[in-house]
Image (tube, rainbow, N blue to C red; front, side):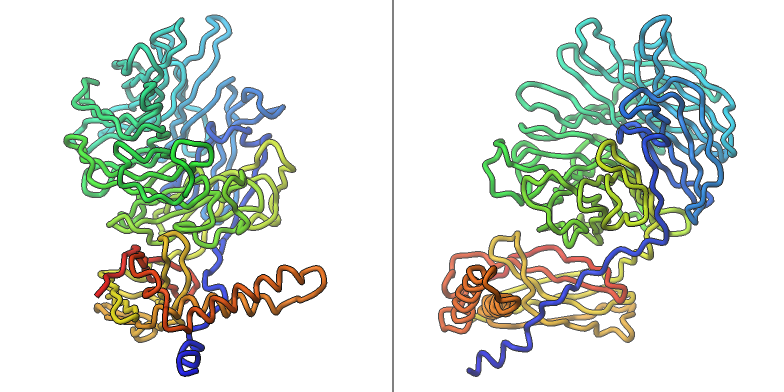
Amino acid sequence: MKKILFLLPLLYFGSIYGQVNFDWKNGYDYTIMGSDPYRVDAKTTTDGGLILLGGEESTPGENYNVSKLIKLSSSGATEWSVYIDSPNRDKKVIQTSDGGYMMVGEIFDGNTERRVVWIAKISTNGTVIWTHTYFESNATAGVDIQELSGNNGYIILAESSVHEPSGNSNITVLRVGPTGTLVWQKDYGNVTYDDTPTSIVQLADGNFIFSGETYTPSTLEDIWVVKIDPSGNIIWGKTYGGARGEYGGYLTKTPDGNIAFAATTNSIDGDLTSRTLFDTGDPGQEGWDTDVWVVKVNATDGATLSNKNYGGSGEDAAFSIGINNLGNIIFPAATSSNDNDVVNPTNANHLKGNANSDAWLVILNSDGTIAWQKGIGSMTDDKGLYFAQNTTGAYYAFGTYYYNDGDWVGLLDAGGEPPNFFVAKLGNISLPVTFQSIYAFISNGNLTVNWTSGKEVDNNYYMVQASTDGKTFKNISDKIYSKAQNGNSENTLDYSFSTTSSSAMAVIGVGLLAFGSIGYSRKTRVLCTMLFLIGGTLFLMGCSKNDLIHHQSNSKVFVRVLQVDKDGIQRISKTIVADMK
């Protein structure tokens, strides 16, 4: 009985994850934004608001009749919206140094019966200043555009049909002057297979790096990253990935002068040999699920500086990448997971193989661990397409949804197909604690976890979590409150927690006993009986001399620390394996 009394204070069954608070949220249907999530865009603006790019469709799935720009204030109000009369399919919008905007996409020319790259310069109030098409180029569709430093024009990344009539696509880069006049164009790729463009950035030294997908039968799609000089000559080019396919490769510049890209990966070999496996399926077979893959690359020579995958046992897919005001890498994604890195999504009914997803928003620490994450959305299918922080520190999210439930109560209901689009301003997202170190060891059946925090801001408490497979974690501690006065400290603080390894098993057992005793009826008799039996067995095992560690002396015990701030926002330390002593 002594052990049982010791374990009782460790019981905790309540939810510890706070919900995202929205300052505001808007919804738009296909008549305003179109129906293709790959043909829309959103960007923060220097006044703290947003610019949205879409296209009106009279019938879902048709080509846009006109393009549409919507300028939102920081409060979500529409400041202006304009239709741009051109039969185009737009792709990207950026704000330019003069406060106006540039759009890039494609048009279909009826006279030549071909697709052509199209760009447009827009004033600060939405007036079209000029447009330009590039019939002299092989490029067929513009996918990204960046303004050059020194008001020297623009660099355009486009898809091209260099090898028509074979049908294979390549990548074209076009450099144009301040009014759109073509300065030079160059084509990149191989003749035999497709190459698909994704992103382009200009470096501080005036060179450029672009990314895309390249295909070979042996490795399927890989991420292809190429550095070119101001004249378009290749400095270096490298592929990244494995044998099962990588997709996307969205680029961002990092504060140290290098680059990072976010992709969707399905591989476990090649550059993914260190991939954390969240799925227990057979690699390369049906049911082997994708993860988000973030890779930091040395801009000088293309060497990999770091790479890490994120997600859970469901499908996780990247859609863009960015940098917040503190220099952290951030990315939006779609996730159908509800485990591992994906903690407490809005759609908590995610199961492996379930097509429904949440829009997943993630902020990383400098070491690649997750500083903050949240799944938002409805009970059906949602995707996060854009996630960024504005100049005042506020975060915006943009993506797709279908039904106005979950986080989208009160918005327009798409009623199925096609999807609607949401844009939301999130409430305060703080990164209150930096984990400086964490160490765990097991000695004489006792698990001890020690960790040190850096600066703490509005910190509330910690909880220690443990797992025997590194995937499913359980709370094994009660709340361990911050040592900092009012949760705020500029100094490092040391924390420690110790318990017998049987605690986790006893906690799980008591939890099942408790749930088994709720709602006992004829309809639930079988389920409740099973819960009682399983819970009682686990509880007795947890209280026996042959505890978890002694019983599985050759098994690893994975440990991590959960931190929760005063607003309920949480982050998780890196996962470590406890040493055996």
